[in-house]
Image (tube, rainbow, N blue to C red; front, side, top):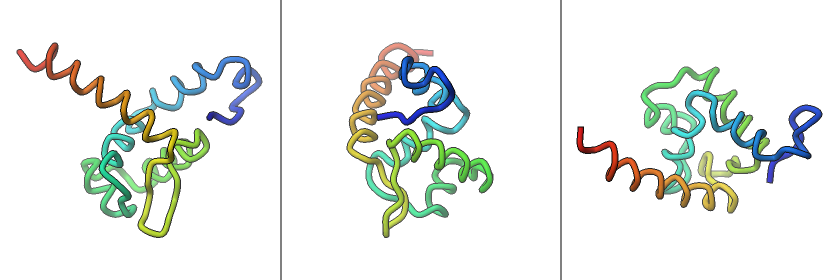
Amino acid sequence: MARAHGKNATRRPMMTVLTTLGRRWSLRILWELRDGPLSFRALRAAADDISPSVLNARLAELRELDVVTREEGGYALTDAGRELGAILMQLARWAERNCGRR
């Protein structure tokens, strides 16, 4: 799934994933793409007008991780991205149960 980022990436794929997904906006971008492809402009608007330079950087990182792809209709989740999206849906359900009470 993840390509090499640094000397330990191939030995520690979880660290590569955590580093990439832990960056601001990464999970939000994946969340916004869960229902299908979005153009750069639509994705930017959906993500509360993230700056274009940051959006470009995060999309490049997510493409490098092979969870996002660029296609004719815009940006979309890959098979690996959809698999990760299922995990995000579980996290969303957990958040509703445990954090929605406040």
